[in-house]
Length: 252
Length: 252
Image 1 (cartoon, each protein chain N blue to C red):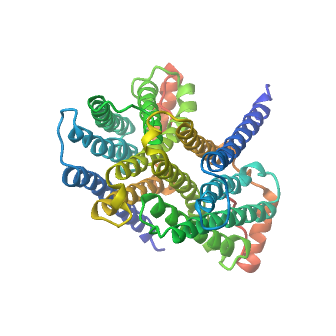
Image 2 (tube, rainbow over the protein chains, first blue to last red):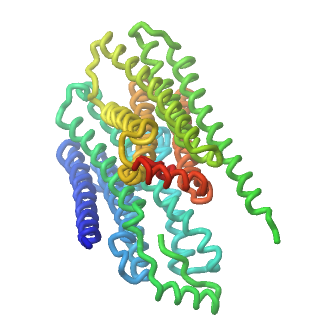
Image 3 (cartoon, each protein chain N blue to C red):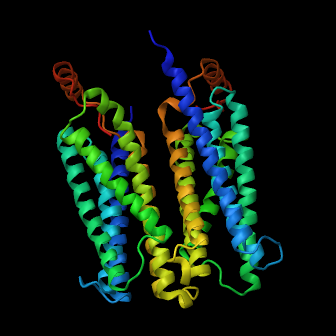
C-alpha cells in the first residue's frame, strides 16, 4: 500500500505555511516602502511622519503577528498544548503592543493638525477591531492561560474564542484595506486613476493582505491540519477535571 | 430529564436567522436611501444616476442574496437535499444577475465621463470577487447540479466549494466596504469629518454589512446548525455510488 499520502500532505502544509509567511512579510515590507519612500519616512513628533507609523504598525501587529499567533496552533500541533498556548498568548501580546503604538501615532497626528478623530468608516471599523481584539486577548488569558473559569465554561467558550479569532482576523484585514483606500485617496486622488507607482503599490499591498487572509483561513479551517487528539493529554484533562473541575478542554 | 435544550436551540437559531435578514434588508434599504436621497436617484442613461445603481445592486446581489444562497443549507436543513441544492443554485444565479447589472452600470458611467476603469483597490478587489464568484457558480453547477464529475471528485471538491463560498462572502463585504470608502471620499471629502448625515449613513451601512457577515459566518460554521445525517439519503448515495460512480456527497 502507498504511504506517500501523509508525507505529501506534510509537504503541502509546509509549502502553504511558507507562502503565508512570504505574503505576510511582503505586506509589512510594502507598507514600510509606501510610508518610508513615498510618504516621507518615520518620526515620533506628531507630524505626518508619525502618522506613517500607523499603517506599518497595523499591518505588522493587527494582521501579520495576529495571523501568526493563530497559526502556531497548526504549525506546532504536535508540541505540548500548554507551551503552544503560551506562545499564542505572547505573539498576541506583541500584536497588541504594535497595534496600540499604531493607534497612538494616528491620534497624535490628528491632535497636531486638529483633525477630528473617528469620523471615517476606516476608523469605525479599526476601533471596533482593536477594542474586540483587546477583549479577546483578556478573555483568552482568563479562560486558558490563568484559568479562572470552570472546565465546563472553558469547553463552552472555546468554539466562541476560535470563531471570534477568525472574525477578528477578517476585520483586521478589512480595516487595513479601508485604511489603504482612505490614505491613497487623501494623498494622490488626482493621479490615482493614472496607475502611478504609489497607487499600484498601495493596491498591491491590499491584494497581498487579502491573499494572506485567504491562505491563513485555509490553513486554520482545513480538518487535516488540526491538532491530532493526544490520549495522554486527554487522560490528564479528565484527571484534572475530576479532581479540580478545571481541566483542559481541547485546543483550537 | 429536561428536554428544553433542542427547543431553546431552535429558538436561538430562528432569532439569529431573523436578525441576519433584518441586517441584510436594512443594508439594501440604506444603500437605496444613500443613492436615492443623497446622490440624486436612479436612471439607465450613463450618467451619475446610472452609477447609483452600482452600490444598490452590489449590496443586494453580491452581499444579501449571496449570503441567503449560502444560508438555505442551514434554514432548510431538514428538507430533501436535492431541492435545497436547486434553491441554492437559483438564489446564486439571482445574485449573479444583480451583480452583473451593477458592474455594467459603473462601466457605462465611466465610459460616459471618460473615467479609467479598474484603477482603484475597490475595483481590483471587486473584479476579483465577481470573476471568482462566476467561477464558483459554474463549478458548483458542474459538480453538484448537473454532475459531470465522479463521486470521488465531488466528495473531494465539496470542502473546497464550501471554503471558497465563505471566502467569497468575506471578499464581497470587503469590496463593498472599499466601495463605500471610495464613494464617500470622492463625494463629500470636505465635510466627511464633520459627521454629516450622508457620511454617518454611509459608515452605518458599512457597519451593518460587517454585522451581517459575522452573523452569517456564525450560522454557517456552528456545528449544531449543520444538516443532520440522513440515513435514507446516505443509503441512496451509496447505492448510486455503487451503480453509477456519481452518488451524492454530503451537503455543505
